[in-house]
Length: 362
Ligand code: SF4
Image 1: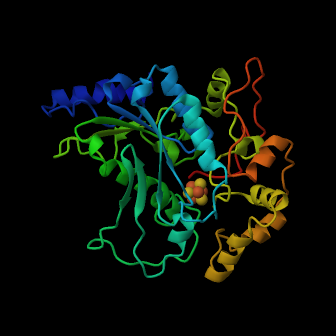
Image 2: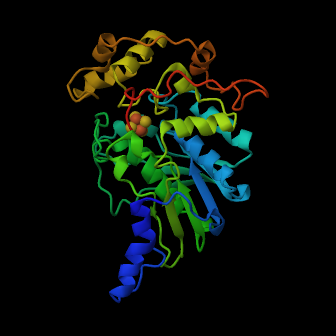
Image 3: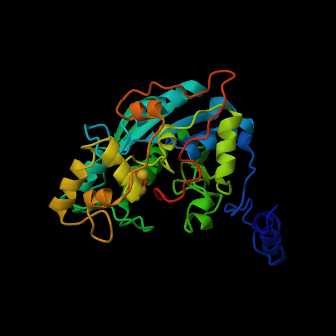
C-alpha cells in the first residue's frame, strides 16, 4: 500500500476521530484506490473511447470479477452525427460497436449536436443540445437559455491543459457524460461507478489526479439520492501493464497503435506532432484540407507557434506504415477486423506501443 492510500484509508479518518470531527465516512476522495468493491455498485459505466486505456479498464474490471449485468459502455462521438467527419477516425463508431458485441455488453452513444465542427463554428449563438442514447431511446437535452449566453468560437481548441481554451475535451466529452448522468431517472437512488482510463504516466497534470472521488454529477445527499463515484482503475498503471492485459485477454490492438500512433485520440487531434501530421498527409492525402482552410479563415492556427497544420506536415518526417490491414481499415466506416485473436495466434505488440511523443492527452 502506498503512503497516500494509507493516509486516505487510516490516518485521515483517525485524525478526524481524535479531533472530534465527524469522520467523512467513508472518505470520498482517495489519491490511490486500486481496489474497490465493485459489487457495492448498482451500475458500472465504462467510458469507452476505443483506445487502449479504456479497453484496459474494461478488461481489468472483468478480471476483477465485475458483474457483467451491471456494466455498460458509453462512447462520446466527437464529430456528432449530423454529417461532420472533421476530426475522428471514420471507423471509430463501428469499432466501439464491435467491442461491445465482442464482450456482449450494452453500448450507448452520446454527442453534442453538430460535434466538434458545429461547436467550432459557433458565432454569437447558444451551444447546441446534447443527444444521449439511453435504454429507453434517444433523449435530446436542450440548453438552459436563462443561464447560458450566446458566444462565439471561430477557432480551434488551443493546445493547453486549461479546458476553457482546450474546449473540445469539456464540450464534447466531459459535459456530455455529466449531463447523461444528470438526466436519466434510472440513476436516481442508485450507486453508480463512472470509469475513465486516465493514467498518471501520461502527463504531469494527470499525475496529480485522484483515483477515486465523487463525480461532478453526484448528489447522494440530495433529492434524487444519486451516488456517483468517479474511478480511474488504471491511473497508476504503466504502459507495459496496459499491453500485458491486452495480451492476457487475446485482444488485438486498436488500429491507431497498429499504424504507429502512440495514442488513439481523434485522428486529427490538436495535440498531434509533426510526425503524425506528416503521416496523415502522406497516407491519406486530402484529409488535412478542411483543417487547413479553417485555419486560414479563422486567422488562428491550432499550433501555438502560428504554423499551419500543412506547414507542420510538410516539415515533419512521416512514419512508414507496415500494417497494411490496419492501413486499409482507416479508409472504411465499417470496422471489419476482429477484436480477439484467432485461437492459437500469437499476440503482436503494435508499432505505436511505447511511443511517447506523438500526441497529447485529451
Ligand atoms: S482527442 Fe484531441 S482533438 Fe479530440 S477531443 Fe481530445 S484533445 Fe480534442
